[in-house]
Amino acid sequence: MPHRSRCSTPSIGVSWIWFFGLSLAGHLMGVFAAGANLQRWLIRASAVIMWGVALQLLFALLSA
Image (tube, rainbow, N blue to C red):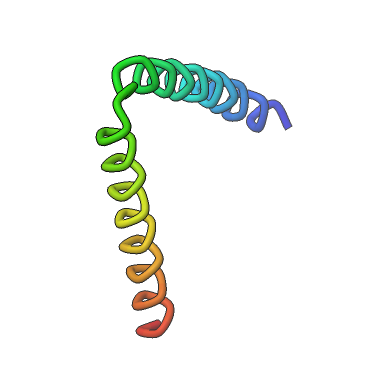
């Protein structure tokens, strides 16, 4: 049982660091991306990435 706590404690710490890093990055993007054109571009780029990942997962599922 002690082995689990040794592995989970760093994982929780890394998750918190990642969460705060993402929130800081989101805040900075909001400050820098005040223009509507940049925000639209970011939304479209995000959508393309999500669709790409979804298609990749679908192809992996169908080929398995």
